[in-house]
Each structure stands twice: as structure tokens, then as C-alpha cells.
Image: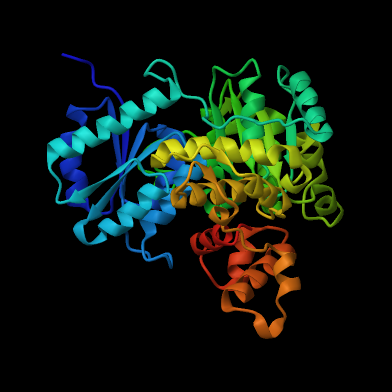
Length: 451
């Protein structure tokens, strides 16, 4: 009998559905894990490392779009673009599922499902991922995102520095605006290091709540708190022998920075609810879009922690300062999305390329990728035209072109969010609180306005 392959993560709040799939799927796949809430999805991605996620389209909370599943699909593909997603949907939501496929889902299954159809779709998704990444059960996947260096002087200088520091264990601090590719650069440093065969574990430090901070980073033992039903390995232990990437480190509250510093100084961690010190062997890479030196002067970031994480400092310039990279990046995204959406488009017209280079790109590479994806979906020719790009004026361009009497509700909302982001230095928790909206809603709006 052929050995079962593939790791499947099921996200569905219906206990009956989870019970049925818990019986069905282990007969066909090597490992299956089921969780009831998408709030656990991001942490389980790092812990379980699935090949395919079977994601329900509807949960209890509405995220303004009319379907929470689309939000979590976007979050999942943003963090783990090589993981395939199969959407689980009711018949009435088929149109939403089709929209989900436009956003990167592999396929969708309608409830009530046929077992053979469900298994066949999940296997097809696994096979597609294995073919795309060239991975097998014995060869863990690397990130599918690759660094595009460009030929400008700043990026060439960064590349030379990376080539020197990557083989060492030096701690690296990466700074730059949102969407400049700080996570991709961290992945490149890991791939070029002597730790490349060990895991690269990424943590959005700014998204960790105070109550989960120690548990997520250092782990906990069974019974440490009410919901601690089993021992949990934290991110430091998961990254042992490899690289730990702490993104948005500038958003960690001051009183929690001391706990992080202690772990880095001692090179040991202690799980919540335990007294045993566990030695850790990691290479640390941190990233932020904030001015940490100013935060140190203002008493918002510990000076000793700043020097601990800042052995080597790399600053990624904004995309508008890397003109030579815009067209190559656009063409790379065209190839990616033309294959995904089965379009014939294979390049840019001269007018389209000029329009891309003239845009401000306040959302940087992430905004460019989103722009190209939409353009490929809507394209009808072999080359993207300037009209296909549908680029709206960005940031300050809108303010110049529209006076107060012309301002739309959406423009007012974007202006308010941008002002809050500036006022609170990009701290998403404080921004969401000041605007009286949830963090998921804020994430959705940041993406909508390419902030």
C-alpha cells in the first residue's frame, strides 16, 4: 500500500464536520490537524507547517467584507504563499468561493460534500504544491519568495553586505517602510546561512497580545493556565538550530521587552508554568518600520535591547527609490499570476511600464503585487496595458487633486487611518483602539488602501 503523504490543516467551527473529517482524512493523508477557529490559524501554520489548508468560508465574526474566509485566505497567502488553500463553502456562497480562487485559493468544496471529491481535491492541491516547490516529505519547503536585488547602488550595497554577514551568526536588524520586502530579505539571509537546512520561524511580534507573548515565544506546560490542555513548544524552541525572525519588533510593549532581552542574553528560555531552563541555539533577525533610535530617546524602546538586536543594520529603501526594480518585479508577478489564473498575458506595454514607474507606491512591493494580480485577472491581451493597471492616485497625490469639498467617504477613511498610523508610529493595537475597530478590520483596511 502506498504511503500516505501530505499534512492537512482543517479550519471549521462546526464540531460535527470536524468529527467527520477526523475519521475520513487520516485514511488518505500522513498528518491531519483540525482547529475550530481561524484565530488559531497563524500560530498553527508555524507549529504544524501544513501542505494544504481546508478553510471554512464562514465563521461567527463578520469582517466587513461579508465573509471572514476571504480575510483569512488573504492573511494565509500573505504569510505562507506556497501553502495551498481549499475553501469549504455552502452552496449559497459559491460566488464568494470563486472570488477566493481569484485571490489565490486552489479550489473549493461545496457542503454537504462527497468524500471522494473532497479527498481528490485535497490530493490535487498537495500534488500541485509539491510540483511547484519541488518538495517531498523528506525535503521541507523553503519560502517560495525570492529576493530580487536590482542593479541600483543601494540594493547592490545591501547585497554585498548580506553576502558577508549571512554565513555568520550575527544578529540583523532590517528596517524599511511597510511592503518593502523585509521578510523576504530575512528569508534570503537564512537561505545563504549555514543554518539553511534548519527552520526559519517567523513571528509577527506586533500581533502578539500581552497574555500570549510568553506562551507564544517561550511555550507553556500543560496546566499552566486555563486553556493549556497540553505542552506547547514556543517559537524559540521551534527555531532551535535555525533562524528566528521577529517582525514588527518595534511594537512590543516596553514591559515585555525585558523578557525578550533576558532570553537573548541568557540563551535560555523557560516555558510558562515550568521552572526548567531550556538552552536555545538561534540566529536572530528582527524587522521594523519604526525609528528605534527615536523610540530609545523617547523611552519607548529599551536601549540595551536595541544594541542586542542591532549588530548589523540593513535598511531597505522604498520601491519608489528603486526604479530599476519596478518593471522586473512586475514581470515576475505577471508570470506568477498568469499561470495561476490561466491568462495569456506575458509582459507590459511601454505605456504600462511608464505608468508603473511614475506611481508613488506608498504600499511598496506589496502594493505593486496587488496591482499586477488584479490587472492579470482583468487582462484580455498578451501584454498589460496602462488601462489594465487601474492605478488610482496614491497618498499625497489624492490630497493635491481633491479639495475638501471633493473628498469621498473612502478618501476620508484612508486619510484618518494614515493619520492614526503616523500618530501611533505604526502600532496596530493602538491604531485599532483609537479608531474603535478590531485588529482584523484594521488589517483589511490597511490592505484595501495599500498602507
